[in-house]
Image (cartoon, rainbow, N blue to C red):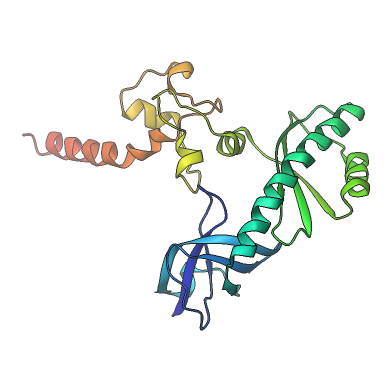
Length: 227
């Protein structure tokens, strides 16, 4: 068994598990952790708990310390600088006439890397763009191409239901959604009515799918027994 805490780095991001060691870490705390991409600032959303080896990815990274006020100030500075970097990158994209849409920019907590998220119809040769950005920011540069669902998650918005998008407000992971789910729920198969802002099938089709599957099984058994 392993003692872990669950940490999120974004409001509706995936939960990652870390070893708290001897630290008295509680749900709601902000912490500084070691990750695969460097030192990061995150929020504890799952307090200390024991899990089996199959529930975690080994080796476990560590919680380095509980965050201090200076760390929170650094996070705000990073966010402010990321907005400036967004404008600079857009300008460089235009200079290189690249067919890509910049979606978001993020500094790692330790400012060891800047990550530029973008969408594009196909592959983009951004080698010269990376060179220009590295010359401006003098740190490691990563350009990460994302899909339309990830774009909606980052940008947010209001869904057809009139509520804030699930993916940007609470949904940590994307589950596969199929047209069969819409059929099982007797919904219109008009793409305009069952697609979200991202243009893909709405994630909420998955939420009720299990309940409909159970009802369909019950109905099948009912008919089989001849009631």
